[in-house]
Length: 174
Image 1 (cartoon, rainbow, N blue to C red):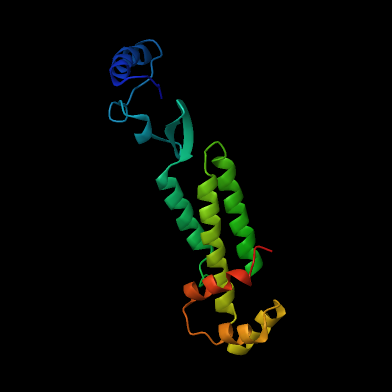
Image 2: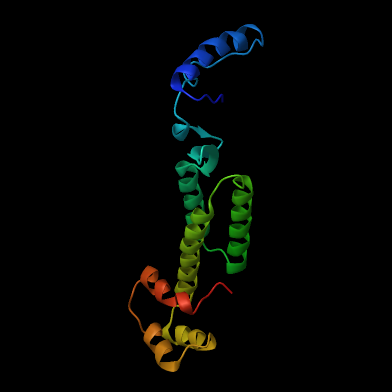
């Protein structure tokens, strides 16, 4: 990757650098992959680039975000038969590795949004495991919920995704 200030200078640099790479360094240049494009259109090792206050910054490319979300969907699936401790261990390993790989990128908002979404998926796993109304009521009471609120939530007929939004105050980050 070679960065230039203008498209014209990038074209000129490309024309001059290819003979140097092929002739002096004896390397092959793939003409299909070699080209001139704007910095916001480039994807490199899962990163994309953008300009902020005149400087080039990193962000995670949308394709990398989509792959990460698909992997989290796979790890937090409600029907994959993993125990909660094993699921938590695998999830933490994956997220830790992903964040360490993309630590150079600006992704504070992305991580907050993804964390909120993943926690909701995890709450759905727990809600599905508490199959019976009696079990749901008992566990909600253990989590310090009032009697009338526990009855209301335990007897709710809402789907898993809607229910876990209501459980947000009960099943906290702790």
